[in-house]
Amino acid sequence: MTAITFTPISGSFGREVHGIDIALGLDDEQLFEMTNIFVKHQFLLIRNQNITESEYAAFGRRWSGKTRIDSFTEMHLPGYDDINIIGNVGELFQDEEYRNGASFWHTDCAAEPDPDATTMLFCIHAPEADGETVLADMQSAYDDLEPNLKQQIQPLVARHCYAGAKTILGGRYDWEHTLTPVTEETARRFPPPVVRPLVRDHTITGRPGLYAPAGSIFSIDGMDQEYGDRLMAKLKAHVTQPKYCYAHQYKPGDILMWGNTSTMHFGKATQAATNERDQRLLYRISPLGLPVGLTAK
Ligand SMILES: [Fe+2]
Image (cartoon, rainbow, N blue to C red; front, side):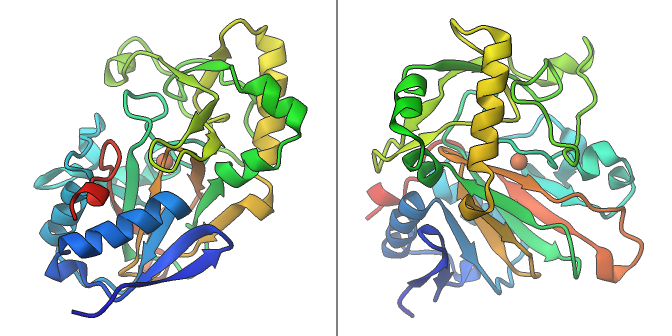
């Protein structure tokens, strides 16, 4: 079997994986190597994967042993309740709420019980322009904060909820999508708010990073709302500087996968597809918990 190799993508942030074919499955050694690089560099890109839906599902289900079932069941890929369809193709995605509902800075699962989930996106169709996923490296961004600010935020405890449920600290940039406010009826789809530290050490590597200072954070314990709003706006502006970001322009066959422990991301907004050249179609799997590959060897 070909040896796996990894090449840099954006400094220390991300690695491209070479020498694996997901269709053949991964042995424990390959899973160990991929997981080791994944936790250190926070995201992986695997290109040119010619795989079936069931081969992709098997890969996602193996990654951490458990996958998330999205409460938006209308987005499920038929036959797979743990694969969501994302993009601008088809009737459902005429609605901007579905098509561009992730077009704002956020961390997946920040308002759910599992802050260490992985997000995987497998590209079926990619437009020639737009539709990128932009990732922010919140470990490097944390490293660069002034010592006084690090000291101030280190003990802070934040509360997170689904983005449409409350007023989110730090506000929205003009280009960011604002979700339709949650009503009593739609609230049933979302879990109750969760409590998280603002700075989290990665469970495996121990490296500290900022945790979800935008998108879902609605209060900070013991802090005045106005002050918290200004502080989160400042942190959001810091971590989303281009030097901490990577924008991935998809090609069909790409699998992009990132850890949510200390990253944020958004999907660039698109129009509804009108022809084959502007179609954006991705299949998302969210393996829950930390990957299990380091113990598989
Ligand atoms: Fe997301």
